[in-house]
Image 1 (tube, helix red, strand yellow):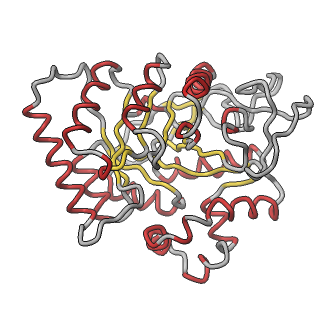
Image 2: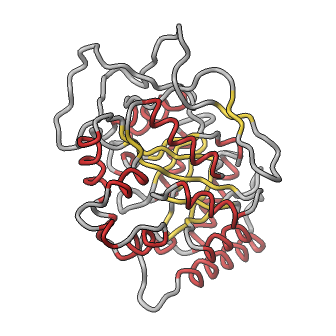
Length: 343
């Protein structure tokens, strides 16, 4: 799991774009040196079919379901698809499992996930299919202590979404030094506080109005008053990292210092597809080392300012500045700086 690298891309865009555009986008991410792309399942495309398409469109990229909803398919279907992907694309697919914020009356999430994992384990033992070249890799969406413990004991690790760095540290403590921890975090490349917080509040609005996420944010330490009226400045600043490239990069590295193995960066405030050419903070030479008790240090690409003397590189030809999704695309006037490099 360490091969995923320190930073990856998290995007909703692949849910609704034409297949040809998805293919071109993911190929360009790979060409620019990104090691991993994460995507959710929210009612657009079937998650494991989508994973197979992304894998078939690339040669080295790691593809992570973040997450595939367990309510969407029987364990037998999940097992069959994930075994095929593991066999066809050795070591490149990670199956993230979760609920996608969906709850069923009378069903306890912890028990439902444990039962689903039991079925997957039984199917693995009894499967008539050839064993894949590399082991299946699965992680669980997990926030509370019990689900994190289940992720530690029954999977390769955990995936979190819209959490603060304090939660990352708590999750690492529960997971221990060896389990994988992938942390998604939204970023916005806008240095003006008022503009940035306005876009961030628009992004957070749906999450601040659903019972499941409200409970999660309470667990993260935010009061009901802080969640009202679009969220307090503290909540907004913790859950959406904004600023110039270097400021955002520093904030993202805080998750790594707190215990994340990979931070999956979700770029907001751009037109659909803008993650491809938003100024995401380039990797300079050398490697950043994450130090954690009980773990061998891993060399990882650095996420930060482009080295002096090296030209900035765009992930594609057009210029995309941070802006609300309702605004029209801006023309490429040659004035925007692009900081995409490998991560």
